[in-house]
Amino acid sequence: PYAGTYTLQVTASGCTSTVYALVVTGSSQPGVWTGASSTSWNTAGNWCNNTVPTSTVDVYIPNVANLPAINAGATSVSCKSITINSGATLTLANTYTLSVYGNFTNNGTFTANSGSKVNFTASSIAQSITGTSATTFFDLEINNTSATGVTLSQSAIVNNILTLTDGIVFTDAINILTLMDNATVSPATGGVAGSYVDGPVKKTGNDAFVFPLGDFTDSRWAPLGISAPTTATTECTGE
Figure 1 (cartoon, rainbow, N blue to C red):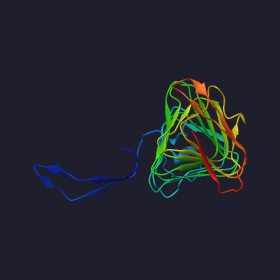
Figure 2: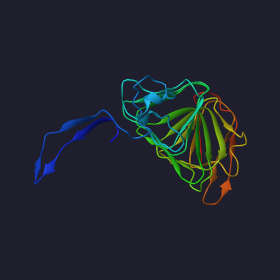
Figure 3: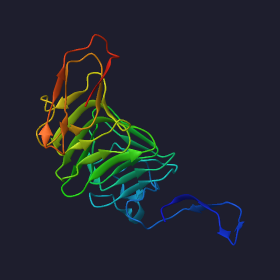
Figure 4: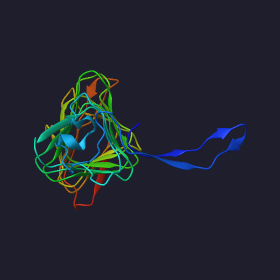
């Protein structure tokens, strides 16, 4: 199993044992963060099997003493799916990019500093953004060429630029994509015919804005523009 703390309770013939805490201190699973050497993502000694993850490796970040930061070494790193466990953190520094080729599950804390970027990229699989609470990105790029795109199973927030290169983002009334004050969409036309949001998008602020909307079922890109609201705390939702 992955390193971490697990709960063990045995039930047999109607009898239930005491609850025990099982602590797993080691794992040979690739992509498991240990923080054995430091907090640097790009240091091989911080990962099981002494190997920094690539686009084909699922990453699991448990709550350990040294929690990862992408802030040194190669400015562009990648993984397949990534899970930030409860109590764990991941920090993405200025000018650094994390490319995710699978799902993004945030059950802990993800800190995207100014100038950072997360890129969702895939050619044949659906991707999702999920977890126990909303995830905030600085720059977020969608580049998923599969027929099923990226689904929000938890709300997500973009503080700076949402880049719609390829693929559909699916949202709903509960799992909403929000762009904060002064955040923009690229292209400024509100996405492109092959990349938009199917579902609600919320915009906060006093900026003129083009909502990157569309309907995947009808193969329809339908951007919606608004003039600038009067206050920076105004919230407008397009769908």
